Amino acid sequence: MADRSFLSWPFFEDRHRDHAERLEGWCAQNLPVAHDDVDQACRQIVAALGRDGWLQPTAVDPAAPGPLDVRTLCLTRETLARHDGLADFAFAMQGLGTGAISLFGSPQQREWLEKTRRGEAISAFALSEPRSGSDVANMDMSATRDGGDYVLSGEKTWISNGGIADVYSVFARTGDAPGAKGISCFVVPADTPGLEIAERIEVVAPHPLARLSFNDVRVPASAMVGKPGEGFRIAMSVLDVFRSTVGAAALGFARRALDESLARADGRELFGAPLFDLQMVQGHLADMALDVDAAALLIYRAAWTKDSGAPRVTREAAMAKLYATDRAQEVIDKAVQLHGGDGVRRGHIVESLYREIRALRIYEGASDVQKIVIARQIAN
Image (tube, rainbow, N blue to C red):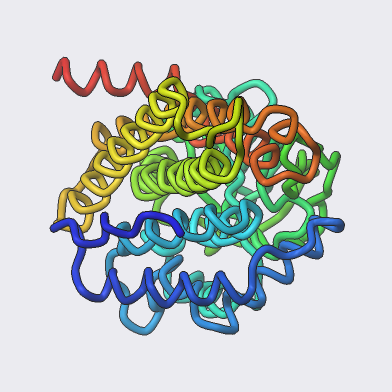
C-alpha cells in the first residue's frame, strides 16, 4: 500500500483528501486495463473516467467558469499513474487538450468542455512541430485570414491523442508580429476537411501519438481562442497549469516503484536472509524514499501556490517538473536493479515503469529547458 501520510500536509483541504481516497478505491476496482489495443484502451479509460465523474477537474464548468484546481489535477495524476500509466495519460490529455478553451475560450468553444468532461469526446494539444519542439516561438505552421475564415497549413508532430482525438487545440502563425507575438490558437474539430493523420508514432511506452498534416484546413474566425497574436501567451498559461501535473505523474510512478521494491526486499531471500537486511539495499530504499518525498513537496508547493491565486508559477512548476521527473527516473532505475532479472522482464510492473518514465523528462518542456527557465526566473 502506497504511503498516504502526505495527504495530511497543509497543502491540502479536506475535499482534496476525500477526492484522493475515493479515487484510490475506484482505481483498485477499474485499473489497470488491457493495453493490447492502445487506441481502444484510451477510449475505454476516457469513457470510464467520464462516466464516473473523474474528468470533471480537467476543465472548468462551462456554466460557472473558474480556475482549474491544480492540486486536484496533481492528486489525480499521481494516483492514476501509480495504478496504470495509460490511465494517467488519458486523464492528462483531456485537461491539456482543452486547457486553452478552459482558460480563454468563448461560450461557443466551451461547449466542447461538456463533452470532454463526460468522456464523450477526446481532446488534444497540437503545439509541437518537426522543426520547433521546445522552441515554440519558431513554429512554421501558418493560419492565413481569408474573409470570415482562417486557412491552416503545415504540420504538427508528437501530438498526444493524435489519431483518436475529436478536437484539437492548434497553434499557428497568423503573422501579426514576429516570433512569439505572431502565434494564435484555434479550436479544430478532427473531422475538419484537410486535417489528416500523416503518421502514427510508436514509442517505448505505447501511447496514441501522431504527426498531423493540415492541408488548407479552413476554420471560421470564431474558432480562434482569444485574440490574434495571443497564442503563445495562451500556450504558456496552459503549460503553467499542467506542468506541475507532469511531475505528479512521475511521482506516482516513483511511489509504485518504491512500493514494489519494498515488497521485493521483504519477500526475497539472499544469502539466507531477507534482501532488506543488506545495508546497501536499505541505503537504496532510503534514497528512493527521500526522492519521493522531496518531489512531492515541490509538486504540491507549486500546485498550492497556483491555487492560492498566483497569476503564474513558472519557477515553481519548472522546479517541480524537473526534479520529480529526473528523480523518478533514478528511483525506478534502482527498482529495476533491486528486482534483478525480473526488473527487465517484459510485462513486469517495474519494467513498464522504466519505459513509462522516460518520456516525462522530455514532453511539456525537456529537463534542460526547465533548467533554463529556472535560471532566468531566479535572475529576475
